[in-house]
Amino acid sequence: MSDQKVHDWIGKKVAGDNVVLFMKGTRQFPQCGFSSQIVQILDYLGVEYSEVNVLDDLGIREGIKSYTNWPTIPQLYVKGEFVGGCDIIREMFQDGELQDLLTAKEISHNKQTLTA
Amino acid sequence: MPMDQNEIVRLIKKKLPDADISIRDLAGDGDHYAATVVSEEFRGKSRVQQHQLVYEALEGNMGGALHALALQTSAPES
Image (cartoon, rainbow over all chains, first blue to last red; front, side):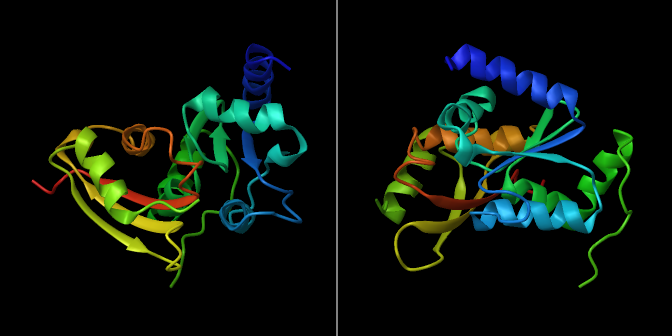
């Protein structure tokens, strides 16, 4: 696939599904610790999401980086908008900001906060 | 391929001269770092935009020579 085709495909994917995680591996078998952390957070919050395993397609693996001008994977999208990679999502989750964002975007989730 | 800690600081400073940077080599292998960057440039920007500034500063090394850099960014407390 050309860059443009990959970007079109990503654009349709993130517009079509409410929450999309581009990750290495699958939610059952994450292939990278950073991807695994976001899976754990989404599962903890009981969010429905679709995942794209970038290891299945080199075009998407590279294309997702130029799509957002973001050099690393994982990447989380909510309602078509890029929210962040592992560090940002973890920080937002710990601060309760991720839960607020999901609420604002009307995405159902458990309204749990982290209890230390 | 590892990247030297001083080189990371130098590149960030080049882009964000006022930055206050603390950096830790997490695994001692020159390949997994955690950095905290505080700069006035970050004020009013989203977290994504703040991290993008740092990635730009690293001139394409992020995701290449530099495998893992856990980032925490903020503007100085005023």
